[in-house]
Amino acid sequence: MNAEQPQPALLVDPAQRIFKVARRNFVDPEIFRAEKEMIFDRSWLYLGHSSELPKPGDFITRKVAGRGILFTRDSKGQLRALLNTCPHRGAQVCRERKGNAKSFQCFYHGWVFGADGKLRSQPGEASYPEGFKGRDTSNMQPVPRFETYRDFNFISFDSNIMPLVDYLAGAKEYLDVICDQTDAGMSIVAGSQEYSIRANWKLLTENSIDGYHAATTHATYFDILMSSTDNLATGMGAGGYGYDLGNGHAVLEYGAPWGRPVAQWIPGWGEAGKSEIGRIYDNLVARHGQERADRIARRNRNLFIFPNLVVNDIMALTVRTYFPMAPDYMVINAWALAPNDESAWARKYRLNNFLEFLGPGGFATPDDAEALEHCQRGFENSKEALWNDISKGMGKEKAQHDDELQMRAFWTQWNKQMFPAPASGIKSAAA
Amino acid sequence: MQSANRTEVEDFLFNEAELLDQWRLPEWLTLFTDDARYEVPCTDLPADASSDVNLFYIADDRARLGERVKRLMKRTAHAEFPHSKTSRIVGNVRIQSRREDEIDVTSVFQTLRTKDGVTDLYFGTNKYRLALRDDGFRIREKRCLLGGEGLRPSGRISIVL
Image (cartoon, rainbow over all chains, first blue to last red; front, side, top):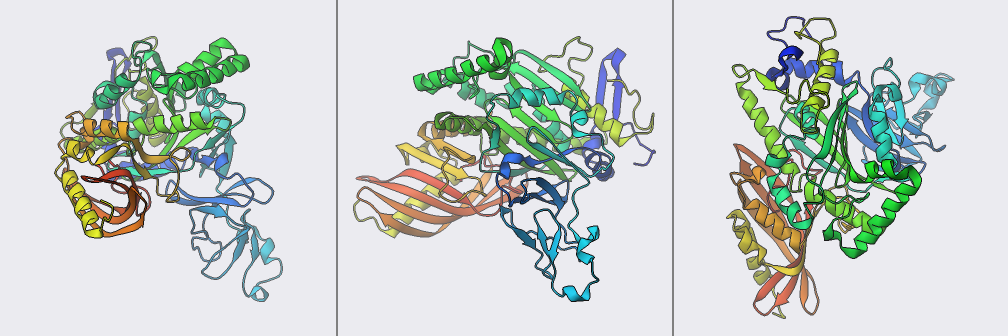
């Protein structure tokens, strides 16, 4: 970014409990271009879950931050993240969404690559020097960095980025809490929700960790929920807090009245469900002890990993990632994650729960999308109406789940990466 | 209703489309049987995938379909307030198979939705299982197979497809 800023990106004054975000950050094409370089080229980005490639030869093609990635499990069982570009003349090599293959042939001139990206053969080999195939430059290029934490696979285009486990900071422990639901591992359920919102991507970051909007934005969902649950048992947001997890990551942890497949029963699930949920809960207690079992089973988590990954451990378990395509348009991929040892009953009710609230056909997500799109419309006035306010709960010793600490954690990291030179674009660096 | 013909099926489906275009959703709901299902699978799933083991966009039983209608008629269903304007074209209607008390029907649809100055297109195939009743057809199952990949740029299914 040019150091010349017409106004700061953030306006922060802890003493006055002021934290404002310039609406320009959501609309300015310059900011959009700079984010590609300063945010998406310098962070760890979620690529996919190991369970999506169970067998050697399995592959998926996926776009991550505008790059075409070929995600494979090679013949030795090792996961690989390759740039899906032919080293010869640059054509996209694999054109299928997913499948299983021993090799990948670029159809343009017929070069053939293994699932490890190594050149196997090319037509007219005699016209190339001896040893051509042995050159690194003859192979499909791996992404600069590729690391995995508990089957969550991340890539980075920054070869100097810190190791993934360090990057995850406090988010690591929350991923552990989520993955510890089972000791049989987790899998992505088949079926990808692929949708879009006509709004800036950072609005979805904010929305995903916003405990403040639920009562009004999702009024119709709560109407339905109250008719299917004993709403006196656990109020929405009961004992809930928000946490800054470092490096821009954040989480809400709270109680809620909805059923959780691991493991909070609701009357709508009947007696069969009661014994099943009881069995899952007892098993958690046996493995983790009462306290951690209660946290795993009865608390909800909206976990945000900077800059664009959300793992929601709520009425179902979701993995959601999203990418800006324009200042006012983003694409979103969302999946359901589930324990491998779950019964057919639990899987069915998990998916049923998921669809009631979540996704572009659910009773809540469409209203979120509408809210985000109307923020984007509101920002049409950003030249005169300059600032968003995310100061709720500032200065508290412990932020509640419906305060805005989580958003401040995101924006502080965003600002740090966007404007690394001191005092260029921020009045005060403190949050 | 033992000898349902295509014209009768077309009349039924055109009427369904009109009820939806006119936002007469409670009336539309009466077209369904008590054990009905309305489902929209994700576009990377096979056409016959089960919502018990796969993630869909929508997998409503009759009770949830009723909740969907109730919700969409409220001012607090923000995604559809004010209601979008829609125009549905239904075509290629065919009776695929007949059983004693029901028939399988397929049709293609193109639905345009306009809200706040933006128009989106939804298209695909609807597969119906229609129960044959003395007073006409009832929908026992409606499965909407979206064409295209994902929901881009339409983004959401806040109307009924």
